[in-house]
Length: 414
Image (cartoon, rainbow, N blue to C red; front, side, top):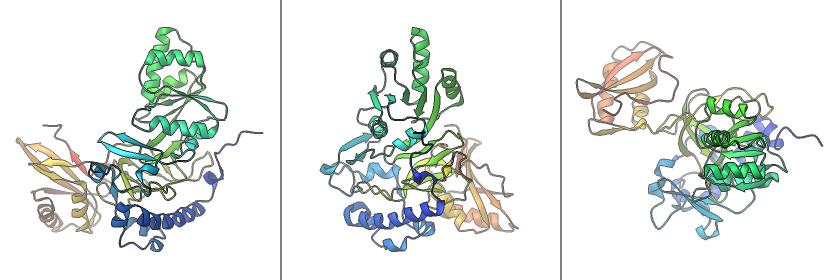
C-alpha cells in the first residue's frame, strides 16, 4: 500500500468546512466549560454559548493569559479551576517553570503530536530517540504518546548524558530523533569526537527553541531531515512543519487568533502579534482564548503540500513587552488603549530611551490623514493612561516595522 502524504482527511478539507466544524465544537465547549470548570463558569458567566458563531464573536470573549497562571493556580488549588474534571480524574499533573501546572487526560495521543511527527516522516515501525524531558514537565510524554499512536517504538532518553545517549543511538539504531535542535547538534559533534556511528538517524522533529539555519545545515550534512514543531505544555501540538517547508501548519484541533500584544484584538493576516489559542475539543482542559505570550504571524495562502489549514511563521519572540519608566510600569494594553481613543492612528509603538540621564517616552503613530492638533491630543491621552509624560511623533503608514513590538525599550538595561 502506498504511503499516505497526509495523516488524515482533516488536513485537506475545505477551509470553510474546517471553520464550521471548529465553531460548532466551540459552542459545545463553552457550554461544557461553564458547566464543569469553575474558572470558566465565572469568566464566561454572561456569555451565551450559542451566540459564538464566528470569529468576531470569539474575539469579544475574555482572554486568559499564560502569564496569569501563577496567580490563577494558587497554592492548594494547583489547576485553578481551569480543568473540567477533578484533579484525581486526570492521568498526570505536570509542573512547568513559574511554577505553573499542566494536566494530562486519559486517552491515546492526548497532546495530538502524532500529526506533527507524521508530517516529519515518522511511520509505523520507526524507532524514535526521545531526548525531551520526562521529569515533571510533559514534553517527553507528549512526543512519546504521538509516536506510540503511529506505531513507533520509543527510546526514552530524556535530557543530558550526551555520551551515553550517543552510545545508545549507535547501539539501538533508532531511525528518528525528537528533542531540541541544539542537543541533537551537540550529539552529532560528540559522535564525531568519539567516532560513533549515528547514521541510522534519518529524520528529526525538533521543538523547544528556535530551529536555526546552521543547525538545519548540520543535520542535512549528517543525512538527517529536520522538521520544526511548535508545541507547549498547556496546548500540546500547536503547529508543525511539512515537507513543503513553507511555514508551520496549524493543528486541526485548534482555533488560532493573532492579536495585538496585551489585548484581545485580532490583527490583520501577515501582521505580527501574540498567539491566542482555543481548544474546542479538549474536554478535560477547555482553554478558551488562551494567550500564550508567543509572537507569530499568519501566512497567506495554502501550503504546497496540500494541507489547507492556516500557516504561521513560527515562533517569533515573546509578547510580554511590559517595561518600567520612571518607576512606573507601562503595559502593551495601555498603548492599545491610547491608539483606540484616536481613530486617526493606524498603528502605534512606544519608544523608550535614555536622554540626558533620564527616561523618555515617544509614541510613534502611523497616521493616514491630516494630523493637525492630533499630536497634542495624543500627548494628553498618554498622560491620562500611563500617568507619565510622553512625546508623539507622527509617521507615514508602513513606517513602523512589522515585528509585533508595541513597546520598544532601547535603554539596554541602563
